[in-house]
Length: 370
Image (cartoon, rainbow, N blue to C red):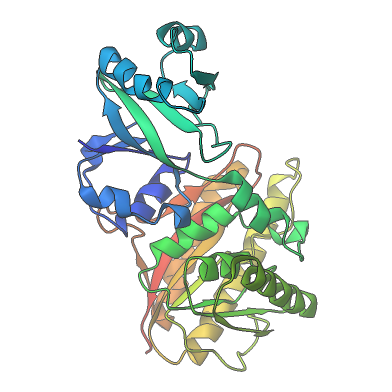
């Protein structure tokens, strides 16, 4: 046993993402923690994985071993910061266990609701998680924690933003990219502010294409991609152009995967009546149907597709029916539903947050030119 991965709240989506990088046994999953005994566990591209909160190595399996582990920090010349968290121990228990160390500054960051690990404050900090996994207690040291500040730079500091365009989260963009099997060349036909293309180039994609029906979004996406190039020193080729997906495509670039959020309907406030939501669902359905038909006529070769479809919680059953009705309609154009995780036969997954009035159904299609 080497260590654990700590997933976020979107568990099925996170498992599908991880399965594209490494095989693992789902029996080793407990709550949102996955136990690993594979040396490749240390080599995973965690910075590019949106579903992983943290990754830990096992440093002790008993309290005495853990205290011995802490003693090496106590003997260090500089005062060490050790951040402690646990999924079962209260802060006063953590403090009581760690008395007697004079050269360690402890910080206790217990989160009773979701065990969210605190962020590293600087490179000298050590984050320790005391995990009760089934009936065994493990003492863990984090070697990776998702950096919220880096996400914030891409999400809130980019030069072009528009709150009306859905605000695709960078983490979701990463997960969608990782569900695809070939991301050498990416096309986003609903590029908006370019959020997905920004994550693609950051993960190493060398050719990105985007289109939108608004000129301001074309210009804004170009600005955001230039921002990524300058900010992170990236080398890539991009082409962002005008295209209304409900109309005949003027041209389609050569790409391996089409990855996009798509249109999710008008912004919601949570008090909309069911008939309004059903009208939105109908509008989305017709737009997607036009899009898939027009794309199939213009596509130059086979490709894979990862997208979102809106699910309205108040009419979730109708939303699901709308999605599967769409699949039936577009099958004649050459599209076929593929599982987002072949290892665990996860066909689709919801990306949802409690404060959102529309959820995203993540799905994957294969397209064969007919």
